[in-house]
Image (cartoon, rainbow, N blue to C red; front, side, top):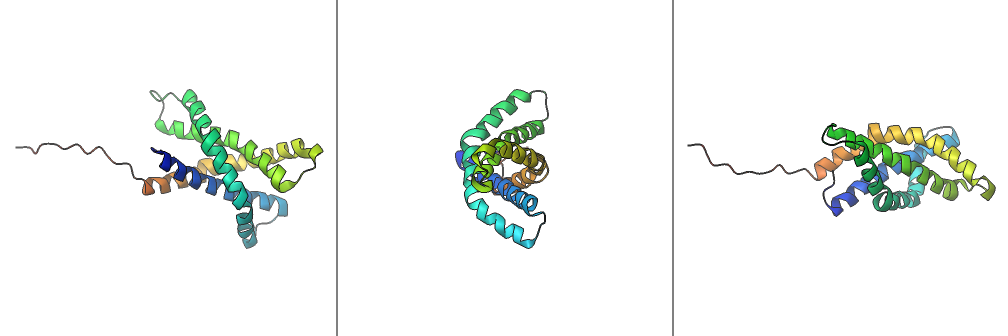
Length: 164
């Protein structure tokens, strides 16, 4: 979808924001047992440091890896092009969720050193279903819709001679 480095930065920023903000809200609800208006405000505090972590991971490491793996899964000559979008999304979540869950375990949950691994595994297991479905059903389509309107694809403008 993004064609230039600038477009890739914009796309990754939008996706990181929407995914991280939603996942922070989800984790606040898991921790408090309730969703209130305050949940949405509290999430902005964690977004200030979790957002940049997600952007850096996705932009510099996981985004390229996800695309490489997805192109290995999807046969572009045979498959519907949307299968590539789904594959990239699924692979991105498969790598981003454990990474971001680890960051949250260390930075937010403050698990004792002896409990980091089990806390991280539990956090990943709790986050993965939400991250997967949020990405496929909401965040991905919303970000792609907005992106298409910010950067509309130009059709090949072929000049044709008028019929005489």
